[in-house]
Image (cartoon, rainbow, N blue to C red; front, side, top):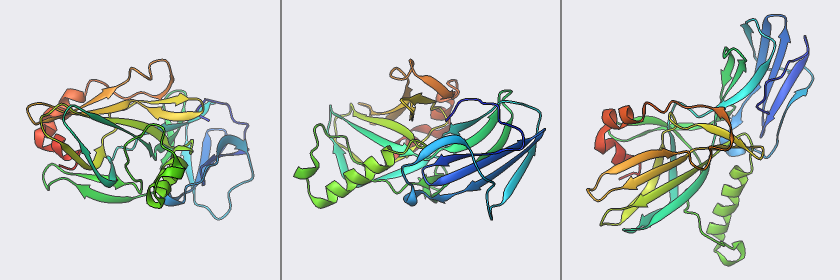
Length: 271
């Protein structure tokens, strides 16, 4: 899916992206693209490509002119933060931690080996919402995903219908190969319980990898410290052996923490 390849001249190709479709055609230095986007809630489990295909019908075509032979489809985390709400209020007591896994809709770029971006678009529609106060808040992509802590040996036959439905919906998103699977650890090292109602996930420092035909990211670690502040870090120890398909800058982490300040960091957990 994410490897560079050399397309045959004047032939249409397509990528099926879990219900959305991206078309591409090369003719000399002329590149044509078309995209069928869908609402994120209507995502389906169907990802493959690039495949030789028929021309798109009744779809707006974008044109790019650039010199190059080999091209690849590459996933990127959104430059806009993702906002995910908890299905129930989650309370993390002192000295404990909770783990979450969610599927994030990426931004897709078609790139030449030189790094030239020929086309960029998001195949999934999501609503936006403001998160935080008026001065330090951010416009976020609001995802229709229930945030639930991971539970060991959870048996769908032993839970109530609402929980079972939530587990099935989460499993559906996590089965989609065009989404980025992201693990989040919230650790409470403070003396008081930490209530998590929603999480704003900032991905500008998060790399993306390929694992068994699935897109995965670095782990996001949010720590409530003894002095009452929150710290956020990117943990790549579990992904160093994987093939990287997007490299995020690592030098900007301290800049983000300094610019945003403690009040902003507290807001990422909806405090």
